[in-house]
Length: 151
Image 1 (cartoon, rainbow, N blue to C red):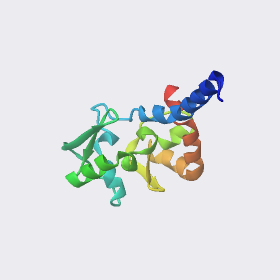
Image 2: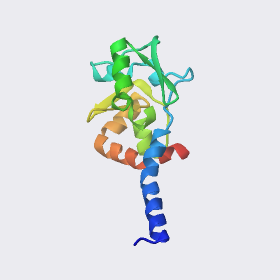
Image 3: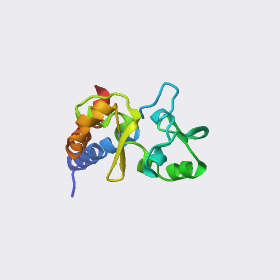
C-alpha cells in the first residue's frame, strides 16, 4: 500500500516533468512594434516556395500574443489547423542568438527550413555564422530554450 509521502513524491515528479511543456505553451512570439509576427510575412509561405511573401492585414489571425498575416485564406486555414507546424522555432527569435544564450529580433528574409521547421536569423552576416554548424546550433538553441527568455 502506498503511503502519503510516496503519493506526494509521485505527484510532484509528474508536475515537474510536465512543467516545461506547460511553460512552453505560454511563450510569447517575437513580433514587430505593430504586433505582427515575422514583420507581417506569411509564415506558411516559407514552406510553399522559394521566397516568403508578405501577408495581408485583412487575412490575419491572433495567436500567442501576435498577429499573423497571410497571403491568402488557404494559408491562414493551414496555419489555424496546425500553427506549430508553421510557426518559427524559438518564438521567432534569432536561432543563432538563442544558441548562444540570448535573444534578438530577426530579418524575415533570412531563414532556413530544417527538418520541416522554420528558423529565422537576425541578419545575413549572422546567418553565415549559423550556417557553419546548423545541427549543432539547433541543438545548443534547444538547450537554452525557453529559459533564455528569462535572461
